Image (cartoon, rainbow, N blue to C red; front, side, top):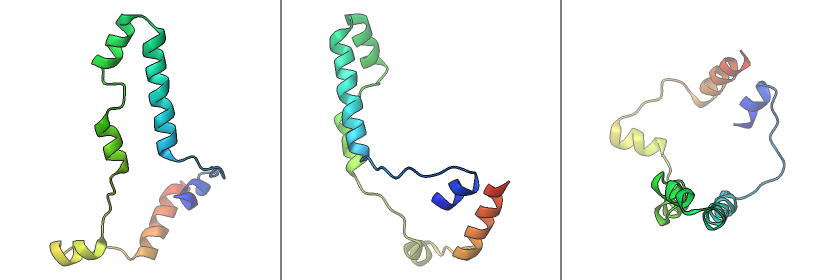
Length: 96
């Protein structure tokens, strides 16, 4: 992703914060807001599904991936462009 961001003039930050830390912080912030503000706000947060649930954390910690070799073996997938050709075409698109 970095080469495409650089083509648009953006830079990538050197600091790295794990996604889980950010999610735990936001969850704690939501619970603090629920505790500090009146009952109608708590009900609105719960009703709109704003607060993360156990399923949210389970989904974040699950691993998902895609394999081109499995797609070729099981589905008969054949890429239209090579990896380098795909990269070049994407770079050309992002330069616009």
